[in-house]
Length: 231
Image (tube, rainbow, N blue to C red; front, side, top):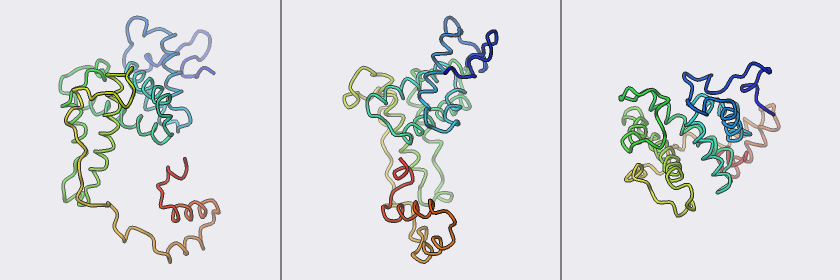
């Protein structure tokens, strides 16, 4: 089925390019390219909440297509979980949004291509997650820094060497010397953050949903994160 964002009547065609702030030139301004892009985005965000489709659709066409192609490649290489696809879309769209808002070269956002990113721009994006000791004494920001860095590492390896097996792809220069950060704390959670047995029993007594009771019991017994249980 063709999305209504592409066709709304025989003589009323609205492409993703026309919905953005500019039109791509050449064949990228025509209907077949827009239909292909919409299908790629729909496939990349299939099964996810609508916000992830919107994150991709709001990006300039070329970058949206690159990310959609990356997720398509991941499907054949590692069959990523929905949680992982959400992470990819969130990280890459947030990375581009950061560049659009902080770009000091006065370039139009539609001229910023992922293949043209520099190491300095990647580091600036990752450093934007840093927090002072007073605001984040447990250094939670380091976890975010490392997760976003991992997604960017994997993406740029694919972007520069898509035809090489995933485990054989070298690091391109753009992501050289961007190590994972270490945190002194073994965990960001304190014992006081966890529910006591008495609090669990109180929850089971008053929670009206059998489904929620079941989920809570499984989470307590397995000590898994939500996406590890739900996926």
